[in-house]
Structures are given as structure tokens and as C-alpha cells.
Image (cartoon, rainbow, N blue to C red; front, side, top):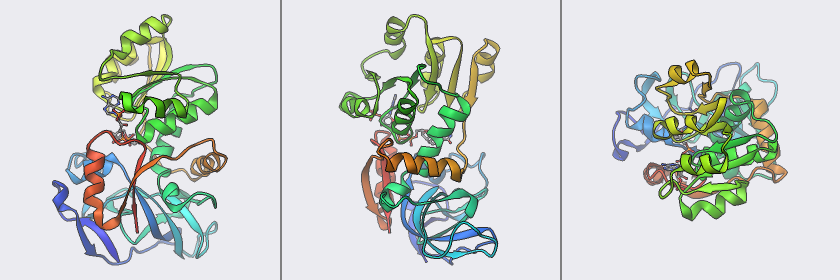
Length: 315
Ligand SMILES: NC(=O)c1ccc[n+]([C@@H]2O[C@H](COP(=O)([O-])OP(=O)(O)OC[C@H]3O[C@@H](n4cnc5c(N)ncnc54)[C@H](OP(=O)(O)O)[C@@H]3O)[C@@H](O)[C@H]2O)c1
């Protein structure tokens, strides 16, 4: 099968179009004929070797942690899917190797969900990684409730955009940070207060507008915003990040509820996200679509750090 692979870590030039053997499937796996694959910052972080110490890997690596497509083959114990079913799935393996930048990817059936009929394959491939990350952060970690205030950093990004909408559906009040060209966009998703982090100090503005402090902060940007984010929480407020939190223990000792989320597969949550998208309650924004062969261009876009919504590879 055709795949984009790397046989060493490095810049975008290590990405090569190669021929690879078809993935093998176990009794509880399905083989997906990939129609579209999502591109996420983790892909170029792995490519650069930045996650070598944290995630085991084996070359040649096929990147890509989310996909949509059609079931080509099912293992003998698979019960929920049959050949020909359109599906979407989170595709990360315990050992980083067989990802979704390929004609075929295998996943355990428990990670996959039926692709809703009125979502395109591109839309379905854009949902698993960023959608599940936002869902698990807001509901499993932060336990966000109606009427609460939440600051969501980087609201125009893949994760931030889903988080704003999920928080809005819950009845929370949303403050977000984005460059000015994205303000109208994040407002359209449900943000009530929008701060241009390039020009304004978000903590000062929030301090003035919410003198009693916020209930929760969701950090999808990283360490540079963490100290200030915690300083604007109510006493005992909740903070969740999807990036490392070097000072987590200090904040916990001060009484804050601090959590780090590393997204995990969950077919039930993915189905729920699909239903929300079908009902028009979760808009899937795709701003860049590239053919698989142009994976380098897709990485170049992701590496800008300023993608609105999602980047997709099509096959
Ligand atoms: N732990 C996990 O399981 C997990 C899961 C998913 C993602 N992540 C990580 O979370 C991060 C976000 O992922 P993503 O897919 O949402 O990335 P993304 O789509 O590439 O996010 C890009 C967004 O970040 C915004 N941004 C850039 N600099 C900013 C700043 N200083 N302050 C606020 N916003 C800023 C940009 O907004 P403007 O263009 O408006 O400036 C852009 O819309 C990545 O580092 C990713 O690796 C972790």
C-alpha cells in the first residue's frame, strides 16, 4: 500500500511516499481503507523526534492519529462492524508506527465509530483527535457545568474550536484568546469575550471583567500562559492543560485542581461528537486539504502554529 513514512527523525524532508505491506489485523481489529486523515501538531512533533523519550516508536513510522474510511476487513471477533461500513477512528498505537497517512490503517474496533451519513469523510477525519481531546478535557477532567466561566486558550485552533462549542452547548460562559483575524470566527463558535493575545494581557483584562475569578481555565497553548491563567482562577478553581504543566505540584499545594489530559480512544464519546456535528451543534472547520502525497505541505501549515480549525490529507 501507498504510505507517507519516515525512517529517521528530522525536518519535513524525511517524509517520503513509499510502498508498505498491508497492516495485519488481530481478532478484535478492523482494517480501514483510508479516505481522509487528520494532520495534528503531534505529527510534526513526532517527526522532529521531540516525543522520543515519551512514546515508544519503531521505524519506518507512518504518522497520523485519526482517520475516516471504509471497513475493508474485520477480525473474527469483531461484532460492531462489517466490510463496507463507513467509519472514523482515533488511530494511535501504543508503539508509534502504523498511523493513518496510508491507504490502510488497522484499529481495534473499540476505538472506531460509524461515520455519520451526513458528514463527509474529510469532516469525519477531523473529529477524533481534537474532538476527543476537547471532550475529555472539558467533561472528564474539568467537569464543566452550565453557568460556569471558562477561559479557553487558542480558541481558533483545532482543539480550541471544538472546546468552545462543547462548552457553549453545556451552557458555560466562554472567554478565549485568538489573533484579531480570528475574532469573528471564535465568536461565531460561541465565545463571549475574545482577547487578542498579541496585543493584550489576557490576565489583566480578565481580572478587570471578572474580579471574583474564573471557575476554570483550559490551556491548549502551553507553559507560557499557565502561571497567569492560574492567577485568575477562583480559590480552588480548576485548570486543565493538554501540554506539560511543570509547576503542577506547586499549584496543587495551593489548593487548585490541576489536570493534564492525554487524549485516549473512546468510541462512545466519538459517536456523541458525530451526533452533535450532524445536528449542527458542533461545526467542523477544515481550512486546508492536501492530497496524501503533499504531507510535507500539510506539516508546513501545521508548524505555523496559526491554523484555523483542521488540516486534512485525502487519499
Ligand atoms: N495532550 C493531548 O492529548 C493533546 C491533544 C491534542 C493537541 N495537543 C497539543 O495541543 C496544542 C494545540 O493543538 P491544536 O491541534 O489545537 O493546534 P493548532 O490547531 O495548530 O492550534 C493553532 C492555534 O493556536 C493559536 N495560537 C498560537 N499562538 C498562540 C498564543 N500565544 N496564544 C493563544 N493562541 C495561540 C493560533 O491562533 P491565532 O492564529 O488566532 O493566533 C491557532 O489558531 C498542540 O501543541 C498539540 O500538540 C495535545
